[in-house]
Length: 383
Image 1 (cartoon, rainbow, N blue to C red):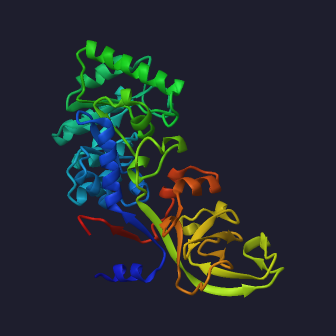
Image 2: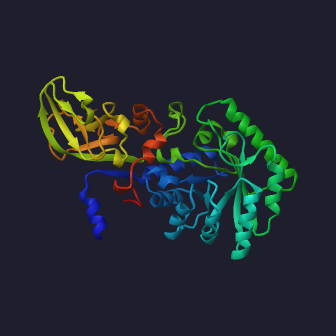
Image 3: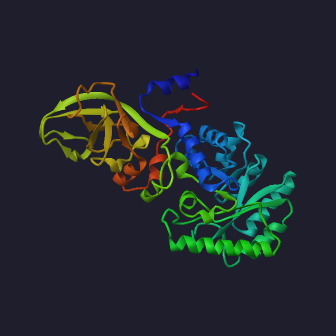
């Protein structure tokens, strides 16, 4: 074991990732989409905080046909450990990133024919074929070919030397909502444009639209490939979807009690004296804070689990520490496990719940757990 590994083992705060849960979730998604539709597993942002390399390998074991990342460097990280699945970079890249993307065999998103020309030039200079997917903006408003000119522009892309148009896709804005008129209009427009491309003789191998919400709510959007992200990790993009697919949360965020004390009524706790004890209390300190990704907005506004009891966070969340009221926990002791996120015995705190408490979205909860929190993997190849 290397010295850095020994150092990370010293710390009681860690994110525990169950890779068998990821594999379970991929299998349930594949059950929904059927055998004729491919699954691109979105592992951007370090697999939503779960760890891109181990999660990508778990998804591949479970039958993913491709991987999705946001940045070129994320794709390179996967290539450097020997992952050979097709990898799509889903964001527009800077011109200076093209050569590195081509060197590592990454598929690039194009949203303009002018930028596709830059990719063509880079591919010809390197003596390779650049594989691209054309993103059509049907209403998301971020990147992509404008719907009004998409067919003409993609025709230009398709004629470029050194470029292979492998895919055409769009991105839904609100597919987590069932029977959403905006999503249905996006899908209708996208299918119309795909049909127009086919009339021009352009039939890419992979036509795709469905994100996590689309996978669950809009089977008509499954097409050649789907791009689930959040649901790979057992997190639902909307509470109403919990009865539609059986997912297992893959992440637990845990720490331990490092200090215990009794305080009297009237004692202020934490920065700004935002909490003052109204009675005699037993208070525990744990070494986790907003620098670890535990949101500051959970100050005085969250619960954690100690000895199968839900207990409140008291006072402001600090950079490295937070305080919890353990007055109601029998035989509480130094070293007791504190579960910030996930299941512990009969109790469970979900990312969706934490997001509500923090006034944010579950994506941010998972992605926000910082690099200084060691990741511990379970369920990997039978372990």
